[in-house]
Image 1 (spheres, helix red, strand yellow):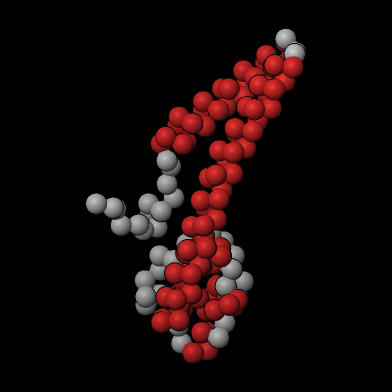
Image 2 (cartoon, one colour):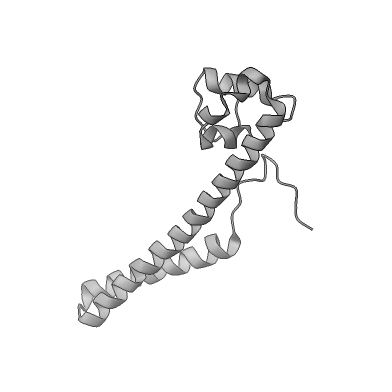
Length: 132
């Protein structure tokens, strides 16, 4: 069963990615740099380019997933705010940045209106949970 997400556990390390793939790609990149520097040839140059491409691929794949997650959070929060905010703030929902919406995500229903007003009025733009 999936664990309920909350502010304390929403940032997640993915063991296979963070502790296996990234270290292996880093070792491969380091080894490819060493080989290209000490025994330069077309083969070592191609191996170095491939190592760089693999590192870039891994990080871009991770970034793409994070961007999709941000878009889902943005949609989720806009729908939630339409339900929870008073009319004067509902007209300002489009003014929230993704960072602000992420920061408000784990606020309780009772906290959202006050925190939303504070975030907009003070132009707080931090992904960390908005201070109370």
